[in-house]
Structure formats: structure tokens, C-alpha cells
Length: 208
Image (cartoon, rainbow, N blue to C red; front, side):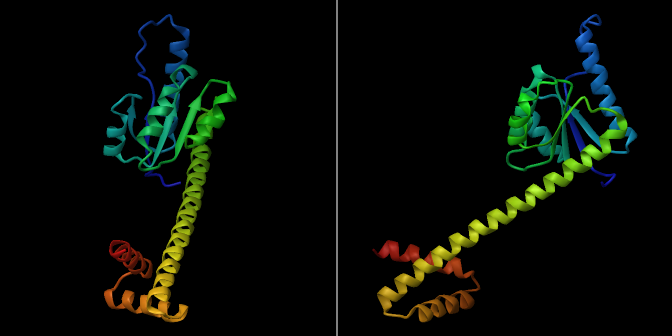
């Protein structure tokens, strides 16, 4: 993994209001251990942010390569904030938690989490965890791109077929002649064949 990988950690404040609150102390220690582990593994920790209404704006400004959510069961809203903050520009998300209730894993993965780690903060585990998360995210992005391309290609083919059908019907052309007419127009205007077909359909709709 690239050492310059820009990472943002979304986590609660490390400040402890009640030093006798054992749960808060343990959570703060775990969160601190995560950040130290990232630095020890030479990752570029650009910021630690609270999960609040300003998270989307801060992530947009920082443009991290990967987001780590450090959360306990009572802080699940942190994940919701992160998912909302990355819905327009997807990024790999890794969630670290000590909550052993795995009922949340399915929802977390469906929401876009690349890795869901329970009690996995040993420093030697951080790098392989993030490596796998990045690889999985890149694979999923490639699959999404392939699916989007396939949908676009199918839509374009249907548009071209509709335009050919109209030309055949209204100008008495053969299918090959209709295709060649669309193709020539696209080449003359420097446009994609599907774009020419769609423009022709739009004009036909206007003319009735």
C-alpha cells in the first residue's frame, strides 16, 4: 500500500469527562491505540473528525483516500454520518469496534464498509487490514464501472435501434441504409452514434 495514503479517522473525542467511567477510559485507550498504530505503520493520518453534521463538508475538503470509523455499539450513527458523507464520492471505509454483536455486520457492508474489524487493533494487524480493504474497494469499484458501462451500452443500442426503425418506417430505408445514415451523420458532426440517434428521436417526438 502507498505510504502516502491519506486517512481520516472518524471517532469520538478522546477527552474523558469522568475518569472513573471505565467504559469511556477503555474506549479512549482503544481509539488512541488505533491512531498510534496508524502512525507507527507510516500512514498519513490527516485528521480525526467527530461524526457530526459537518462531516460531509470536512471530508470533501480533506479528500482522504480511506476513512476509518472508530465506534462502539452506542455510536452507530457515526457510520451513518460517514455513509452520507461519501455517497456522492465513494471511498473505502474500515470500521473498528470492540462490540462483538455481529448483527450489525450485514448492514455495515451493505452501507459500503469495506472491512468490519472486531477487536483488531494490534499494530501488526493494521496494515494488512487496510491493504485488504483497499483491494476490495478497488475491485468493487471496477465491477460497478463494468456494470455501468454495460447498462450504458445496452441503452445506447436500444436508442440506435429505435432511430433506425423510425428511418426505415418514414424514409423507406433498409436497416443497413438507416444505420449508415446515422453513422455518417455522427461522423460529420463529430458525435457519438447514440447521441445522434437520441437527437433524431427528440426531433421526431417534437414533430409528432
